[in-house]
Amino acid sequence: NYPKVPRHSVEEGLQAQGEAQGPVGAQGARAREGAAAAPSSSTLSSCPSSSSSFSSYSLILDTTREVFAAGMLSPIKGPQRSFSFSTCMKATASLKSDQGSSRREEASPSTSEDRPVAKTLIREGINDKVADLVRFLLLKYRTKELITKEEMLNDVIKDYRDHFSEIFKEASECMNLVFGIDVKEVDPDGHSYDLVIALGLTYDGMLDDYQSLPKTGLLINVLGVIFLEGNCAAEEVIWEVLGVMGVQAGQEHSIYGEPRKLITHDWVQEGYLVYRQVPFSDPVRYEFLWGPRVCAETSKMKILEFVAKVNDTVPSAFPVWYEEALRDEEARRQAKVEVRPSWGAWPRALCRATTKRPCPK
Image 1 (cartoon, rainbow, N blue to C red):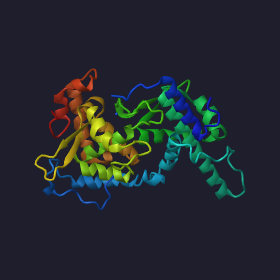
Image 2: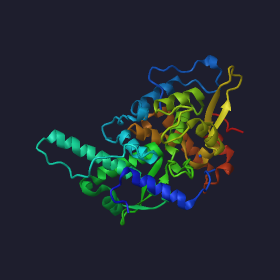
Image 3: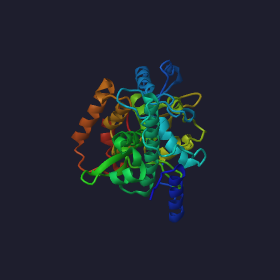
């Protein structure tokens, strides 16, 4: 059982699972500030000039600025979302360390006459439950188990049953936006849910280490930057964007680990990214493109939908990229791909038709 969902319980559960399974080996693994200037054309980048995309992506990332900075995370701004990344990060911190594991005691929502104080306490209690549920979902994702509403209510939500819909929504958003994992209902009658990698992607970057967490959320962010930069992003742009998220090259991140190897090696080896030298650059510089596996598993429209979701809007709010995504969808329909092949066998013609530049050789 998962009786009180203390911070250390999920960690112990993951550790026990890791000990039981033994080594299984590794799996075969926003934004520029508004005032930031686009790289000069004198840098000889082969990427197209994209100052407009810089400003647009900055607008998108204004909503999540300082998301991961120093563990003190800002809530996403927007009229419809109360989800806070700090709540999500509080959940993941316990998967890395038992330190600071003391938490607010279980309590029913306050009935104090001091309504502002009572409202604050209820909100704090809800935040705790969101963090608890995220930890619970991460454990279930690792063990590949379905989850039921009854299980969540009895083992996690408990005295906050009246707030289940809100807690479940916020925890699901955290799983999607931070970890790149979707919570999908598979049995409406039984209210059971499965946890799957978002946007049709098939790689989460998790290792056999019981502390390892899904890294697909970071990958989707990188793919979004590349798309919005004109299907090709200079390496310095990628790192500047990730720096806003508190993800720095050479620095261990609580969720994503050391990002340089992940981005320049692991995802390249897995076919999700192309990392290549900018022709004739001096000093030598590098840039990123989508890899062939992205063409096989997801689409520009799905990536744009993710970006729009982060910004509490719709894909058509970004007309230039929306039109390009529509052309991509039409090219896919014309290709009449009945069954999605493995990424290595994905037709190069389709990939060429859905980007402004040739597929990498």
